[in-house]
Image (tube, rainbow, N blue to C red; front, side, top):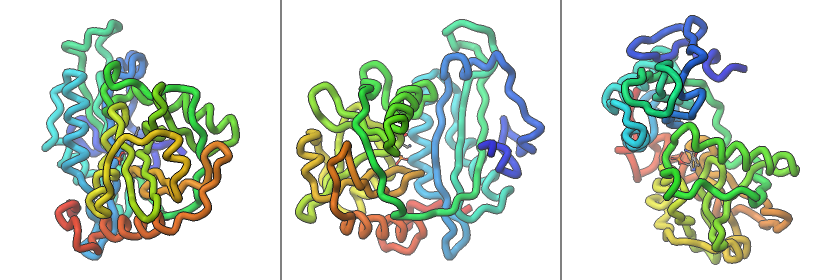
Length: 291
Ligand code: PMP
């Protein structure tokens, strides 16, 4: 189904509208050059109604991306847009997609003076935490290096993830992970990586990886250390998992034929995360913005 038509109402440039009534023109700059920035945010049904998880942090990351592109992005306006769309669509659990982009202002790479747009779409989600264990393969592609493309959610940057995902799926895996030329683990196509060894939890750190908000949440919940990890060490761990707003805490079953026996600690971490996002944990009440 269409990603935006499944939402009843979509926020577009200051108004809530029926998505079927909206169109973007074929000259849209972001469509030609990837000149946009987006976020992926989740809201969860809690005892006090729907609440958006770590909205301020998502808005701050989006602001950085918009700044890199020279956009006049206003996080306060985007925050209101997110909440207004959530209210209009009466969601409980939801995935929220804000996107800021350059519209139709002629060809050419200079974005100065090009029209800017902002939309927010929301879709209802059925959350299945700790579901199927993912089968992962190391990508033949390298992650966009941070000194070429900052690790932010810039639209064009995601072509790198699309290539890696396509390659991994074409070879029968669910997901790709990136390593760098020096043999260090970077991240997956849309999620960060962790390992567990002897009960000790380690968050993979890499300058080319997106500074994930789920990653930060899990570091705070588990007291995990954060450091660079070589691939040889990573595959020798007892358990490995990916994490992200959409992925939540996703146990990994296999990396290129190397099997991880179980995901016991990972499932405990997934449960702790599930409690935090639903406001049922002592940690992180301040992470929730009630709709
Ligand atoms: N890495 C990449 C490349 C991503 O797209 C995402 C999803 N936003 C993540 C990591 C995880 O980040 P977060 O936990 O903030 O969703």
